[in-house]
Length: 448
Ligand code: NIG
Ligand code: FE
Image (cartoon, rainbow, N blue to C red; front, side, top):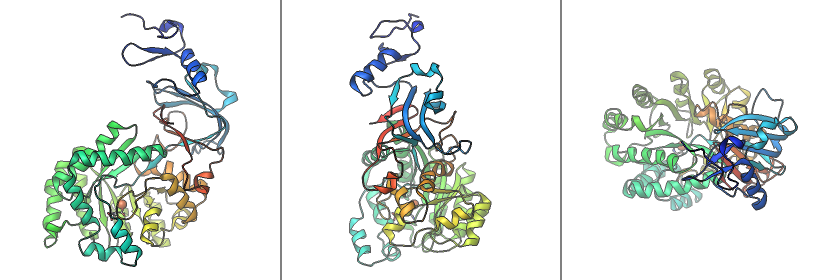
């Protein structure tokens, strides 16, 4: 095979420190790449490998318990999409200096956000319903009268997979541009086998089309669809016998909306057990509308996470902590519902692992920004900004069982969020203006 050469300086591969292969036969050596960056102040070419050196970092929030707090004046070296070196820049080994370099100019770097609970595949909006709720109508009676989730089900069924994909891609792209590098996506607005399957296929396609990792969750038990209103048992049978076999290959988790007026504990137990038989790990919408046993079920079956948790006592917080079930808290949903926030402090003090997520959905949380959610964690839930950031990064990674994400250490996935500020407090202090400067996914600059 012919030796590859740099298309700019013509040096052969073995005479340069590193040669990045581009499209067709184009390649560029580190030195020319660095010059191009210097001249343009930007990445003048598409990075084709996940190799990158970040220098001039004012502060790195690592979330690494082995580090004694954040790293000041840091650098991060990435090869093949993973972190190979991280530390104070003055200690950076010289062998990394030849990598394509992004000078962060004193800015802050933290792990990409992991949004561990969203319903972002849907059609239709519920602005009118929102207006009614703001005039005092409540969510449960709107739902019982065939509005709420059912109205999104009608719009989603009517949309077709292409339109669902276009809409969801737009949302996921905005999330990425706001620093989210991994997103969990639930089905649950199809409530028939074909549309549920389409929703999960759309979720998977987002991960293939955009530089964002997608974790898919089957939520066929989000509501009983209108056509089964008089025969819920037949709907449960459909989930077990038809939907689960049809979606098992395109989902990792099974979720149930276990709450007042939705699915009971016994029904949720049944669906989650069936999900498990199909290889889907359990997670649960629990204790959002009331204290109806969802939390105890999550503990009993060893769910990966219990989500929402607005109604939790001290004793229940300890139960969750002891069982190691991650508490996924959704402050933007409580904000939109004008309901009380989940007791984040109490859960944390009990030793529970907390994750913060958007719950992005058209009914109760028309929110895509994890920055906004971090701000709510601090402003509305009594967390410190540091705890809130941790919950939106490392907490989220634990909630979706991605142990190499949500922290920055050697071996971790190089999903990085570079803030356009030298003070991470700005994430919550200026909640209405994005602080994102650049987003790096698997070592590639994908935003900014
Ligand atoms: O997480 N709680 C259940 N599901 C969604 C809301 C769904 C909807 O109202 O469309 C949630 O808040
Ligand atoms: Fe939800």
